[in-house]
Length: 126
Image 1 (cartoon, rainbow, N blue to C red):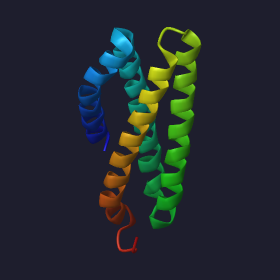
Image 2: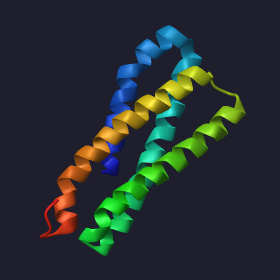
Image 3: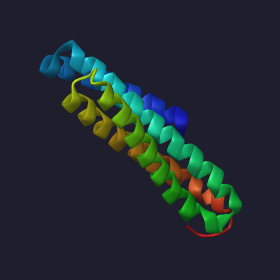
Image 4: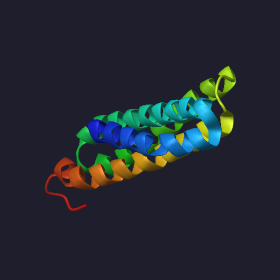
């Protein structure tokens, strides 16, 4: 899951770098990169929590997925606040790309979890 998240986030950055530079300049491109890094770190924490908690058996998979979402929120919010308090990047561009990155990463997570959930629960039906 983590590798796919990184690949899709990098692809999103490649697609978004030209319009971001055109609209916000070079500082916007740096803010875009920082926003995507925050998004991917939040996604990876979410994936780690989900996988770690789902080892308890079929009854823990739903709780693990929800705990992963909570961990994603806490990690992303915390990192975004740190970056915003540093005041080194354009705020609007940074927050826009955190949102875009989280949306893309969440799509990858949902796709991945729907593929591996049956393996995590074994014989139980999802």
